Length: 76
Image (cartoon, rainbow, N blue to C red; front, side, top):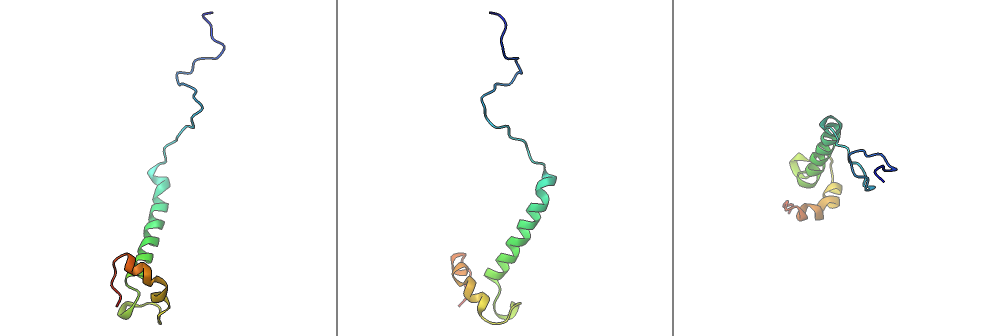
């Protein structure tokens, strides 16, 4: 019984999924998109009131009021 029915491949076959690395080129557009989205969100939560307001009225302020306090931004 020196011969095996399955050929040896060098890697154990445990049924585990093979993880392929993702290149930086593939991640870069998503990283830029998430970064811009985070900056826009940070602006609306932290600075959208008073003299720097892009949108008039108190609507944005009321929508992000609790988030503003949660993140430590003063607003009143």
